Length: 174
Image 1: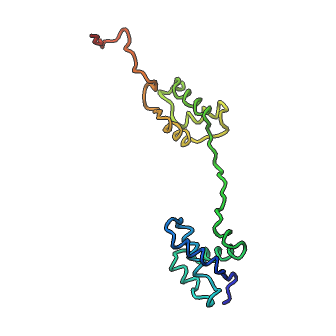
Image 2 (image 1 turned 30 degrees about the vertical axis):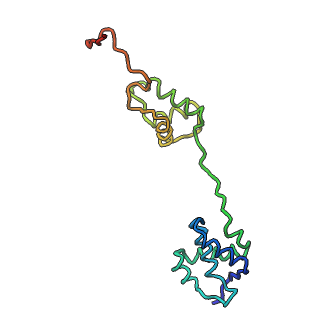
């Protein structure tokens, strides 16, 4: 069966790929790509390696080998080694201002009928106050963890609580 994408490397391209393989500072992915291209090269003595043999040696799928061949035919070595841009779809929900508002809510009084804030209550309150359009309780948790703020503490402030005047516990003062 005739290959649809036949790789024919020039002497310069072959030398560049061999240099990549001999250099120990090349990323593993680039190293695999170079090995695939060298094994798929049909310019010297015809096709020495089948895709199955390349798959077993380099440990990637035949479909990936076909994609690498196609990229090489379409754009040369530059196209094969070009890093694919993948846009980041999930942007931070809370910026610095939003985080400050979240912390202020946490440090304030819990909702009526509640002893303390829950992550879901905080998420609902942030949405209710139009700080963000939507937010999950996991995002709230990660944000609070980043600030070392604990919802389990009675007081989230830095100083210890002062004893009450009518308290049965007397503090020693020396």
